[in-house]
Length: 204
Ligand code: AR6
Image (cartoon, rainbow, N blue to C red; front, side, top):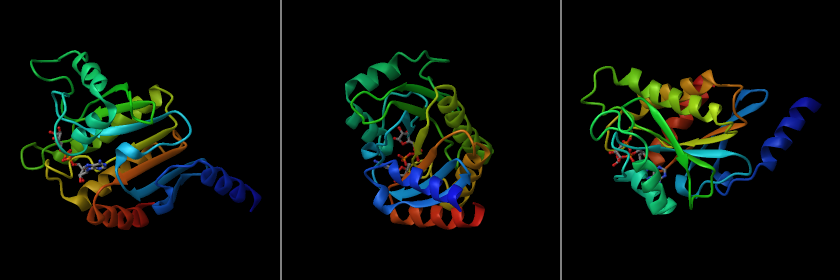
């Protein structure tokens, strides 16, 4: 009993601006998964932290969460992305991979940029989406990041069905169940938030 009490105290003492709306799940005795509605550019937490950007292969900004992150981080983020070497013309981050930059004006330590699959174009989008989440988490771990926040990668203009995306996102985070203090999903729409909560109750 005391053991659990300690954990709960520790988790509630790590404050996020959005925590009033968050649903908490345990990944392990030392790690929590939190699902909340909100704008990921506003997310902050005490500790080494990263937000994930759902970018495109060029990494020079775009619409959706990518646009919001670049606007909030400022022009230095664009310069940092531009300095990521191209692996082929116009491609800095191939689909399913991830790159890390500083976060500049954002209230976190780093931004991890990944490119999810375009659901109706890529073969085996489920393999690529899992690879996006996995590569973000690997990169976070390598950089000693303790807290990571994800948006719903590929669930906007890239057209991934929400339920399938939620199952992949949550089961992949579960693979890293002892590696982070907390992993958060910060979801913009009511609809996606509900789907994520339902899937988490099923899988965690
Ligand atoms: N905070 C959290 N989630 C957000 C925010 C925000 N501020 N803004 C939007 N979302 P999308 P994709 C949600 O389209 O499908 C860009 O142009 C949004 O509601 O941003 O991976 C890139 O440059 C949706 O649920 O990313 C690429 O070209 C989720 O974030 C392309 O879009 C992802 O939607 C990537 O498409």
